[in-house]
Image (tube, rainbow, N blue to C red; front, side, top):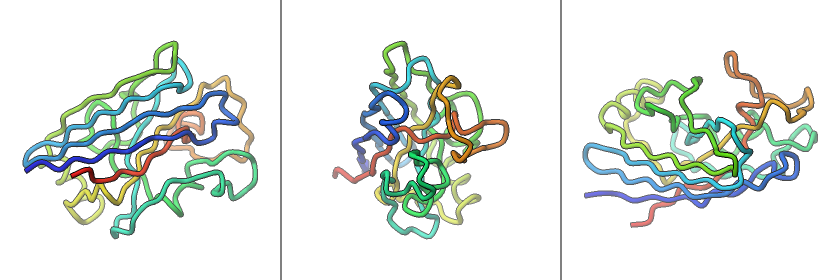
Length: 186
């Protein structure tokens, strides 16, 4: 029996990034696969957009970040500021989500209008095995997670207070630009 989930994705940091990213995410989980479809509009154009679901390993329900999470008052909600309400980065929506290898260059790139569609069918057993290794459970608990879309052009000036360096990737790559709460639709 399939389980269906979706998220309405709304903008975050829109006043500072010069666009109003929005879209939808759909997830279908059956016995052997997780099918993911994310469609985004009005993202920063011609930019790679990291996207993931975030959550709390112990199963607490994650909430979307809002400008209220701008703890240092710099006008941006950066990746570390999302963690108190949204939890940690869990599963990437890249070329191989089942590998759970977050920092890489295989995420979607928006077109000149800021649009992209990401579609991937993932082997559920491989994803659950990696998820258990990282978080101690095979239960993805999608209805307790939130989707984040990240990424602004290098040309956008960010204050030094914007945090979110992941390996060789700076805050331009990790800055959240949109977020949505995943909800069961069955």
